[in-house]
Image 1 (tube, rainbow over the protein chains, first blue to last red):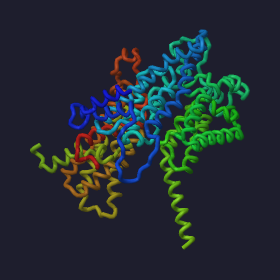
Image 2 (image 1 turned 90 degrees about the horizontal axis):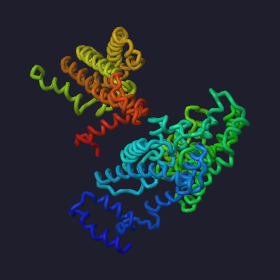
Image 3 (image 1 turned 90 degrees about the vertical axis):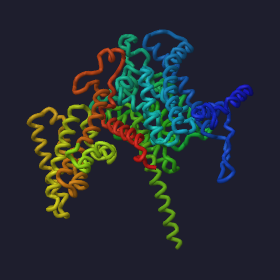
Image 4 (image 1 turned 60 degrees about the vertical axis):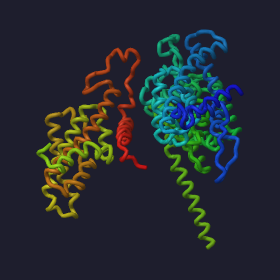
Amino acid sequence: MKALRNIVDKIKPNFEEGGKFAKLHSTFDAFESFLFVPNTVTGARGAQVRDAIDMKRTMITVVIALLPAMLFGMWNVGFQQALSTGIERTLMGNFWYGFLKVLPIIVVSYVVGLSIEFGVAQARGHEVNEGFLVSGLLIPLIMPVGVPLWIVALATAFSVVFVKEVFGGTGMNIWNPALVARAFGFFAYPTEISGDKVWIAGLKKGLAMDGFSGATPLAECAASVDGGQSVQSLSQLIDSLPSFCDMLIGRIPGSIGETSLIAILIGAVILLATGIASWKIMVSVFAGGALMGLFFNVLGINTYMQLPFYYHFVMGGFAFGAVFMATDPVSAAQTETGKWIYGLLIGIFAVLLRVVNPAYPEGMMLSILLMNTFASLIDYCVVDANIRRRARRVQVKA
Amino acid sequence: MSIFSSTTWEAFTRPLGKDNPVTTQILGICSALAVTVQLKPAIVMAISVTAVCACSNIVISLLRKYIPTSIRIIVQLVVVASLVIIVDQILKAFAYDVSKQLSVYVGLIITNCILMGRLEAFAMSNSPLDSFMDGLGNGFGYGKILIIVAFLRELFGSGNLFGLQVIPQSFYEVGYMNNGMMIQPPMALIIVGCIIWFIRARHEEMQEK
């Protein structure tokens, strides 16, 4: 460690003002603070907050919270592939297969995103932020494993440029960058990121056993209803779905990191214990989903509406979105009351989109993006209502 | 160039460059998003708007001393509407396919802010020749942006230009795919945004601090 510190100190003058590589100052700065705790201290004047947590630590905590979902996702990629081709593999064999499939996606997302981030910071003379460490891991986890790498690269580039840098970099974005990357892929190359063939490695090339369907549970549900009319009864639908237990554990086809509710809940515990994410948002997203699910249960017009509401939590990206996407502190609502409204509406819209709109089997991505858009409006209304309430109090006294 | 006085020439060139109606004044965005999926309708739209803009500018400029201020908007609308109907009929007669593709957007030229904007801001207070050149310049400025956007959208969205495939089949075999996002209006907005970004980055005086 000491040797590394010495090397960094030795080359540091080159990057200071007037040095040989002064232009690359922010790149050097980023690597230095990546390796060591920054020794810069804010000036003696003004209000000061002393806290052990800074952006670097926040981001690393989220990355740690994502690890269970990522590791499980890697195993699941191998497991699903073995299932589809009928190969027998050990637990480690499955994990190793998935690791080799997922790693390139993670590498591409980090390399593309970080190079743009460094380039822009360099050009603007800003510091490089740690913000992309999380987005760069979220993007692979919400992609199907069969996605071509160039689409990952293009989608990452699009979201970093048009969602982050255009608005001013880390902390200034209106939407969640990782979700926009997925939305871009979803709308630009729909055949590569949705459908029945992309969720399992090699399925597109026809490397599966005859008659093997790679459809996700959500696609099965959407297929149970045609034009608002049931084509399957509820018991037929539940028979065609994987068992509830399998969906809870996550042994189902889906985006890489989204399938396992248990792994995601471990991440949620880490986020809540460290106080990084808001429990209000997480709880209210699930509450909103349950509310809408129950409403549909009561309505019960077709099979999908009759499906018990808790099925929505274990299918698709609902839990992943609620824990890791909706709670993004930048794009979520900031006020405490606002967080409840924001979360509730995400849950409600996600289930509404799933059940009512057959064109989008998964509604979580679009509903979070929609509420990201309205988050600042919710905050505005909450703050405004508070001001008016307090103004009334003053008037009553006077 | 010498046949025009400098002000007339400037009335023509200003909207082509720094005073572009789409990128600087942010007018006519709606139709710029709607008709730019392919090059052909975009070019026809550009020509139609240029024709209506130039002609209505002349007519209003000729009438400008006789129009009572209180009803000037109605008079301008009547002139624009009649010209749009003529354009619509011509398109239906000679370019029926494109006219069907453009559908409601030909009629909506009436509500294109560029037209009313130029009538109010320029034709009401300038000579017919200057107004004609101003209308022509604004039409071309609008058309220029439309063609750039349509070029990019048709090329990357469907691999074609003027309906002919330009991206070789071998690309598709390697794994290249058309970008479905390009076909949708949001991408047109993003492309227009990028053009504005590019222009502002080049002209320091246009950047707001």
